[in-house]
Length: 389
Image (cartoon, rainbow, N blue to C red; front, top):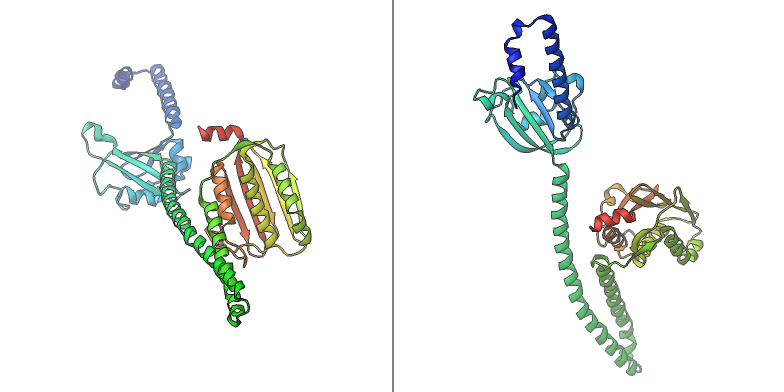
């Protein structure tokens, strides 16, 4: 909206005396300050560049998005400071002129100071009155990084869900022939016992046991796989996480003692109760402590650290075990990844599923021969209520 009163005064500026001129300057300064305050409350970045590409104005949001400093205004060419942006808006970095159409709208990626995805709208300052773009451009940058990440996560989640449903169906179908094999192997075993006096009966007993053992192993793999991927209906109750940790440690106490492993539980805050499924969370703790035990040599140490912030409760399991190499760290939550001869490679996948269904997160840090730290992040009750809504 035009300020017609101010325009009239500016039209008579040559006739103003020193007093009225001072009043005009003060009024202009107030209006400039008010406009800057308004622009700095806008979450989108607003940049004004002149015909040479020099940044003449940038609000606070724009400064943060492209890494400009206050003293860059009026002296820094935009395409020198932000090459990614210059390429995206098709600027000639020699002349500073746009090589394509004057008005531009597109999504671009910025790599400095942070990796961000932004929606850019660029228009010549004089376009509204039908002039060319010699007066520079206004650039509006909208940060859509979270929107883009959410979309990619949703697509990835849908892709994983379809694979999981297919795999669950295949695993279920495999159960039928395995049951049939088990029954027929039992029949063969009974017949061999009746023919025990025949010389070939003893020779067939050993391969029969091998077959039965392999069928049992396959059945165990399928059972664990279905347990890992099938969504479980949560029975939510108020839970004391440290109480559950102590219950699991009591179950594993004998094995910890036999391995000569030390366990320390360290609590830095008063922990609130959370909403969770008792059995599933105990299963997650059991898997993590079991993995830590099997990764450590005698005299190793497992520390369980507990803390909280305003929204989450954190439990961290830190062992002094063999650790995981950097190249293998990304495989930890994959099905059947294991470094143990007797492991089925589904334990961490089960933990990850349990945390996801509780609205929580799991993070793992590890170095080869230096140990592993696994952090579980549980939403507090008020946070969980918002997630459910």
